[in-house]
Image 1: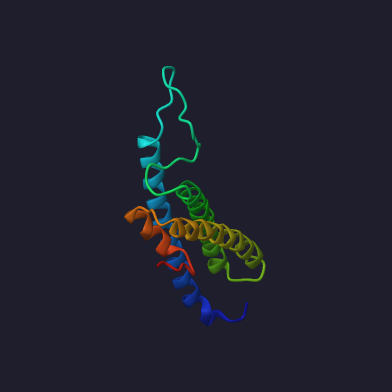
Image 2: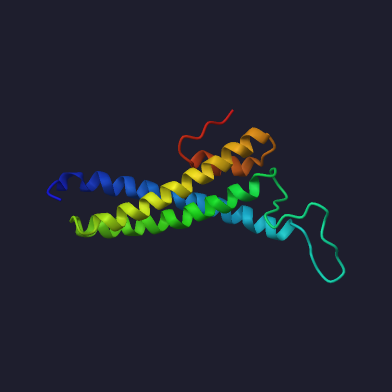
Length: 144
């Protein structure tokens, strides 16, 4: 890669991308922790609720569990893509580009999948105020 003047711009965008995925992971971890703490209590003396779902979230609506799960997957793969991007910026040659680009593509597809669930959650109109922050982080998101 002969064009080394693009290195600072790529590093800045990589840092912003890393920050976005860390924010998504933080809010998703909060939502997952809250769902585990306040979700269904299943034990020896308890029966399963009639409409039991393993992806039940006490806040939001039916799409919230899927949204949070896939947003956290997108966050983890996005952080991995940032690490591969750091390796590519450090070496800045053609041999490190394919691995960084492929993991970035996987992170992008997970992000688009999470965005689809975010749009479904918005369409169902019952949402948690804190989860709106995580939806803002996703690209091309249209909120009402």
